[in-house]
Length: 603
Image 1 (cartoon, rainbow, N blue to C red):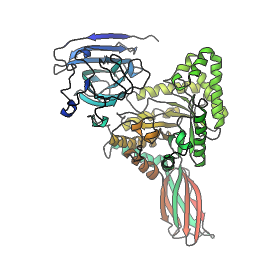
Image 2 (tube, one colour):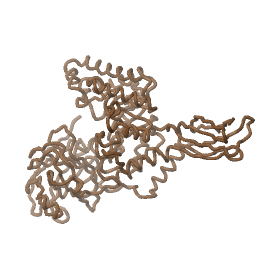
Image 3 (tube, rainbow, N blue to C red):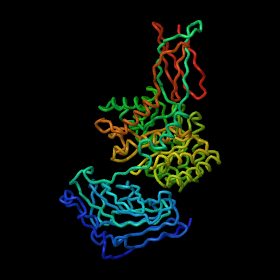
Image 4 (cartoon, rainbow, N blue to C red):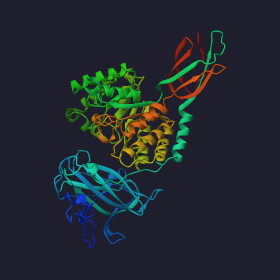
């Protein structure tokens, strides 16, 4: 593919320059802390503009004045880029930043035009050390309309960033748009203040309000697609109806997967928090997935972890959990032992056999013990293996896994969907890859969408329309790694509620798995539902209310004069206890769409 590449250094000097940073805009109590200004007064005059989008025409980067006469950078993008990173501006700092420093960034934006219904521009603000492979210290989607908006964005530096090696960047490629950036400020408070004491812009989303139309429609759809009538007739041995029999009905397990990733070490060992960890699992979830122990490259490299993985899996089996396998292949060097790349470099044929043997080994070990496997993880993003292997080798990986464990559903798993304006573009690319793999014989039984959400959630109505794009493929979809990484616990809880409702209301979605729940064993601490001391966050309360109460049917009722008990329940397996005088009877039954009335003889 031929790229149009534009790398330019824009130098400009303006009389009224808000980029000549000072801290006079900070509240007085913050000024007294003397934060380090990470830009010198003149540093904003130099930015690097990047365009590798290969769009219909190159992006335009201009230095201008905004409507109040202040210096601004205008960026115009003429077509949506493959990645929002493909069109970006970056600045370097002149001050050292240390890992753990508390930073406050301020960004002012305005949409000059944006080709979407809302008219809002969409950009991503991010900070990381130049050419670093570490996580970005912050990456967040920002939006602004023609009226403009200023964001306060506190964050903690995730690595040391020497002066001149830190990049403060804004990317624009998510949308056809023209954006004005009229201010960027970055203040380093070092360790003088706690992160939660800094000002922060509160984010929200459309459809959050009470009685939102989309939510009412989704809840009605849940009643239609996720429930069925329950009709029980209680009779004696002569088939005469029994009046006044006390009937207690409770769901044992939903047909729908309500799952979480679990830490193998805490389940395998008798640690102080192990009992509480297991108790929450049993209350909140019906399905689990070992978080790390079966991942590509992890299975055999660490004997202790392998032993803990086996023990954790066996605990799940003994306690009635369905389990998903994650994952058989993760085609990136950074997620595999160093020896994997060394083998590929030395002998690609042996490398291919190594991967196939690992698939067979893990799939054989868990044959008939898992309900599904994530066969290939993040295929659209991680392509290292395909420098040495043909891309259609993925078809063979699926075929091997299905041959070894034909009863497990074989999933492909990917991120970058349901969480941003780029969602539909990523979905279409994902569907194209899936269709191509299936046409070549890959037995893909399910589509995994990871579901990681940042500080700016996608509107729930858009999540529903995103999911509809998968319907023509005719393959079940599951949310496989859900979390919301934000400090705003109220927004986190509201969006957990609405994302759950949106997904459960979609007829193509068959499962919803969180990527952890306890802060001390969570890859993104702010995303957890329980704090380290096991105090419950509002998002845990939301999960309990919906998943373990409203959508986990239980009721008590007395039979009428016809001996009937009538209700409805969410689809799944149930236990019923019938009592009349000294007579007691327990029965297990299922609630399904094709249910017929159930007659029970009490004698």
